[in-house]
Image 1 (cartoon, rainbow, N blue to C red):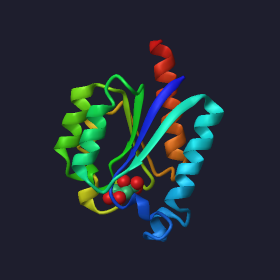
Image 2 (image 1 turned 60 degrees about the horizontal axis):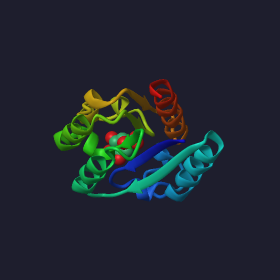
Image 3 (image 1 turned 180 degrees about the horizontal axis):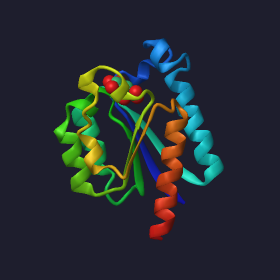
Length: 147
Ligand code: DQA
């Protein structure tokens, strides 16, 4: 069974209430339910974490080594600021897919930069909740290829 870690950064816990015109009306709990249902259908063992703290994301990436086959990562605002997250991904070398609900490059100019992208096998933007499921499929296919 493919083991995946889904890591969500700051303010994603507020989905549904947070700028619904951008992020939609569905809640974070609904996102987690969707991810768990897709994992069950696809034979994926999934753990989902949300934190508002950059250091916790770094800790979880470090602790993922040897445990998970892949990481689905939406670093939220830390995407555009965090060299620490990039370094953590490079350090552990676990295949990662960067996911964004919106397309950050189509928003304010400061969102065009992604530090983590350089350490990710793929980036999925602007697909809403489905982007997470696509990232899971991609990481599962990559894990099966390596097996
Ligand atoms: C986001 C895009 C980021 O720019 C923003 O800071 C977020 C969410 C997205 O999923 O579209 O918090 O990562």
